[in-house]
Image (cartoon, rainbow, N blue to C red; front, side, top):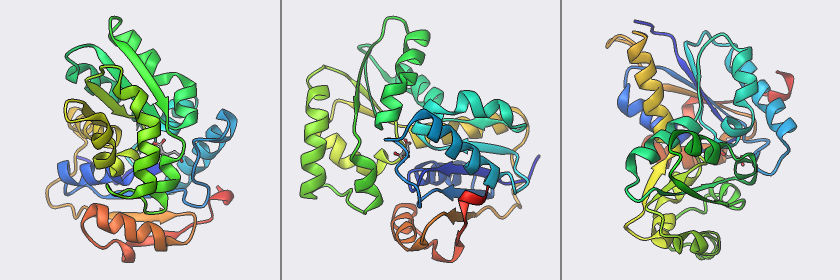
Length: 271
Ligand code: DGL
C-alpha cells in the first residue's frame, strides 16, 4: 500500500483524458496535475525546447512527495522521456508504449494509423515501437498541428465548422489507407473523438493515448503493491501556468464535475 499521490502532466488540457481514466480505475488515488497552459502548444517546438520544458514540468511535480509520474503527453513522451526518465528516481509512465501495445492487440488487419503533433510524428517514436513489437504491421502516420490549439480554445465539438473542415483535411488521406486501428497519439485528441470518428468511419477503432497510459499506470501500481488503501480520499489538485479560467471550464465539462476550486496558478519558469 502507498497512499502518496500520482503526478500527471501535459502541455495543457490533454492530460485530463488520463486523469478521467485514473479516477475511474483508482477512485481513492490522489492526483496532482500540472498543465503548462502558458506555453501550450509544445508540438511545433524543437526537441531541445521540449526536453527543457519537460524537465521543468517534472521539477514542479517533484515538489510533492509522489509515488509515480504519468507523462500524459504524446509530444513529451515521444521526444523527451528517453532522456528525462533516467534523471528521476520514481517511475514515469508515458503514452507511447501504452498506446502502441493497445493498438497491436486491437488490429485485425495489421494496418495501424498514428496521428499526433508535428514533433511527435517527426520523432518517429510510435512507428519505431510498432515495428519492434509487430514487425509485420504497416504504419501510416499524419501530423495534425491545429488540433491542440482548437481544443485549448474549446473548439472540439462535432458540427463545429472549423474543426470538421480541418479534421477532414488531415484525416481523409488516412481514411483511404484501409487502416482498422488509429492511435490518437496526442492526449488532446480524445476530446475530438466524435469528429475524428466521423471522418474515419465506424470500422476504425480509436486508441485513446490518455486512457491507455492511465490503465498502464494502474497495472504498474497493482503489480508493485503500491495502490492506495480504500479509505484514501482520492481527488485531484490542478496546477496551470496561465489563467485558470479556460482550463477550468473545459476540464469541468470533460470530467463531469466542477474543478474550479481545485486549480492554482504556478510560475513554471522558476523550476
Ligand atoms: N497533449 C499533448 C500531446 O499529447 C499536446 C502537445 C502540444 O502541446 O502540442 O502531444
